[in-house]
Amino acid sequence: MAGGSAIRGSRVGAGPMGENERGESAPRQVVSFFCANGHEVRPAFSTDAPLPDTWDCPRCGFPAGRAADAPPSAPRNEPYKTHLAYVKERRSDEDGEAILEEALARLRARRGE
Image 1 (cartoon, rainbow, N blue to C red):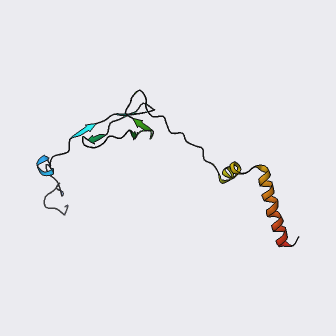
Image 2 (cartoon, rainbow, N blue to C red):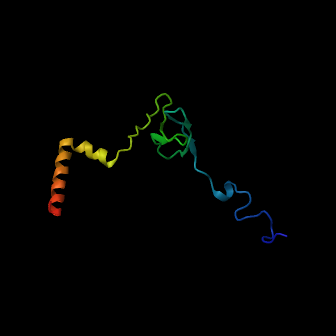
């Protein structure tokens, strides 16, 4: 035998909820956005709200614009760079050799070689 509530299947907030109890909903407009992969996104906005120029596509994550024939281009992803790659961009091989020789000279001086 199940214990608990005297009224089975009821919960807080159960029952018909209509416009009378919640109040009137704001007038809305549905706007279409198109991404570079051809997906269409249709979010609803309040008629008073300013419409954004772009919207993120929930299917692919690309930006979507309002023009179906000219969607925004996909963002260009830069490949992951290591710390060494960034250092090589800033310094030439000759600079690296000079810094290495300087560090080795200090190390040898500390060791007494």
